[in-house]
Image (tube, rainbow, N blue to C red):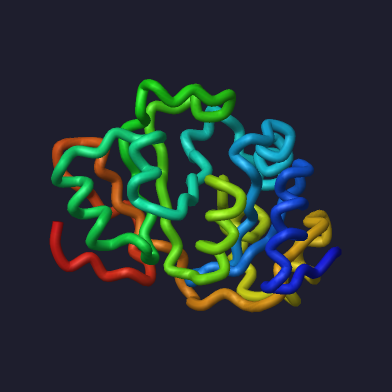
Length: 195
């Protein structure tokens, strides 16, 4: 496994552009990231996570700013206010997909999960690479890895990993706002105090 230093954004970007899966630290747990532009990499991630298209589970899009969300998902004024309040942060927000967003993977789904990480390295990387698809770094059904050593030991199939450790111990809080009201799907590291 190739270990990439946090200052070497270029090497991380190259891994993603070449269709690789990159293990990355976030403020929650270690993640597995691929370029949204690489159908090959997305298929590798689907195979690794054993997540068939028909499973209903969708990989999260990680972006660098709230303004980018509108390209991929529908945002009402109320949802936009909510997003600006809680992003960046330990939150995954499930929204209705923007009908103008066409993509070989997301065309199978009507909803999209969005994350803006409160993690300086990930925000720097996203500004260089554009949106990434990210999921937790773990085999299906197991606990996520928390640092590069665990990734190396437990996920030998992953060829590249950014050095370091994740910032938390819990995955992100998931809020589904595809209906008229927001609904918490998973409790995580972020406490939602109001909608």
